[in-house]
Length: 175
Image (cartoon, rainbow, N blue to C red; front, side):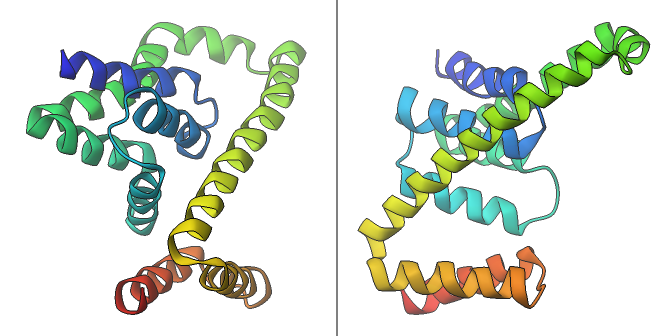
C-alpha cells in the first residue's frame, strides 16, 4: 500500500505541475507534508535545499530521496517512475497533437493563465518556509540569511547554487 501512496504522491504533481520542477514543488510539498505526513515542513525545506544544490531536475531528486526514506530502494524507484511517468505518457500519446497546435492562440492563452497560479503556489510555499525558518532559528538568523542571499544574488550577481551552498555551510557550522 505504501508504494501506491508513493506513486500517487509524485504522479499527481507530475500531471498538475505545469512548468516543470519548480511548479511541482508546492504540489509535492502538499502531498508529502500535508496529505501523507511523511515529513515536516522543515524536513521538506531541507530536502529542497539539498536537491537545489545538486545538478539535475529537482522533482526527480526529491522523489528519489523521499521515496527511499518512505519505502526503501523500491520506494525510490516508484517515486522516480511516478515523477517521469506523466511526461512519458504525454510524449508518447500526445506529442504529435501538441506539435500540431503549439502555435494556437488558445494554447498560448492557457499558458498565460497558468503562470499566475504557479507564481502564487511558489509564493505560498516560500511564506511557509519563511515561517518555519523564523520559528526554528529565530528572526535575526532568518533576516540575515534572506538579506545576505538577496544581496549576493540580485546585487552581486552570484550564482544561486553558490549562495545555496554557502547557506548550507553556514547552517551546518553555525546553526
